[in-house]
Length: 191
Image 1 (cartoon, rainbow, N blue to C red):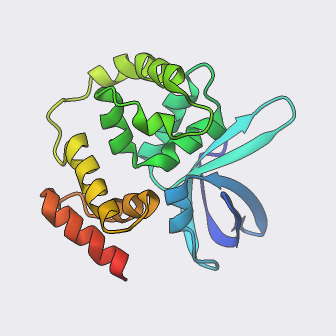
Image 2 (image 1 turned 90 degrees about the vertical axis):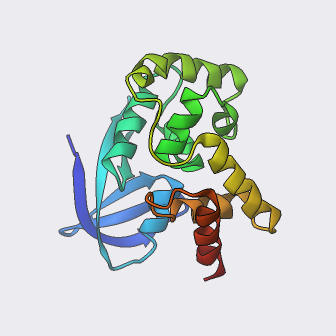
């Protein structure tokens, strides 16, 4: 019903924003990374959206990238994963990192989400397995192991896991060497 919204952020909450679209305020629940892109009030932004309708609740979920929305829709298609859990999963790491983790059967990203234990994480991997088999194994960029190594290197310098992940999200995809990614992330953290 509502697929995309463009407007001005008039209020920023803990996990949501109020987006003013021609005088109408829409509450959009966002992932942690998308929320950070909307941190400037009074700036026009655009979000891909998903409208969740249940018995007595209608909620809008917003995404800065179409790939996030697509992955969100895959996640909520799994029984037991609702929109709030799906948005929490997407807040853990970028979509491509989560996809790599799922293809590599690394459940550590999923078990960081409240309410998802080892069994639920394995269920998610099993349910999404067929959808990921179509993806090519030798993708460009870092392997999941290298991404984890970069995060560990940043954490060893005294930064938190979330600070490290946020900094690694800011690294352009064309920077593929591990050391260069770490340097770029540290420059961002030093600002």
